[in-house]
Amino acid sequence: MTDIDGLRRILTENKTIAVVGLSANWWRPSFFAAKYMQDHGYRIIPVNPNYDEILGEKCYDRIEDIPDPVDVVDIFQRPEVTPALAQSAVAIGAGVFWMQIGVVNDESARIAESGGLEVVMNRCVKIEHARLLGGLNLIGVNTGVISSRRPRWLIY
Amino acid sequence: MADRKFGFETQCLHSGQMPDTTTGARAAPIYQTTSYVFDDSDHAASLFNLQTFGNVYSRMTNPTNAMVEERLATLEGGRAGVVVGSGMAAQMTALLTLLEAGDELVSSSTLYGGTYSQFDYGFAALVLLPISLILKTRRISHAR
Image (cartoon, rainbow over all chains, first blue to last red; front, side):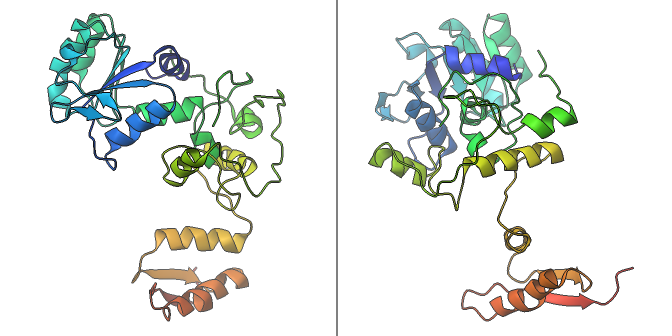
């Protein structure tokens, strides 16, 4: 999944994001991205065995431990550990397997796709949200968005 | 599905600006504002912490400028753009971003006089500052 319409649909239809490898350190990219998404109306479910709570949300050791339905499994982990995470995302019935920018693993993508999930790879949720739903357009970034339609979403 | 590739003319007219959310206006308005409101102190804090996107003050960002910046970036095939109020400001902004202390800037002496003066006198004067940006400018009489 790389096209504007598809990514925008994923970001507007899905509201619960399990962030695997989320750090509690405010200067880490995972924290920055998750806080941004939380501030923009998404429920963040942290997955990291090192913490009990991040961003005011209970933190789970493993993806399988999450008791609630998950729309997007967002991966901040090294590429080589992602195939097992893709299997976990399939096991809990998530809708989207999203590997962050710099996280590329074709095997993981195949596992998730064959399990019925949509796959986004080598992209950042925060960058894509700001690019396609408003934000980056405020600071002169080439968003690639050209449209004659009035945005139906809130532009910050 | 792959994204549609737009032609040069379309990019010239429409990149960097979507139809206005409230009014539906197709062309970009000129936002003659210096300041922008914050919803509350948390909103202001997250803007200053760069945790959310938004305008703070037009010296930093302005929606009209942003439209021009994105449009130029699109036409040039770049990642992003910055517009400023004059050519002198543009070259100063670009060069002070690219250069570090100790770098040498080689320039032709046949540039526009204001440009050359900024290099040869303005930047040279920065060497005297306590937090010195040490630039050596060098004359090249004729770059053929």
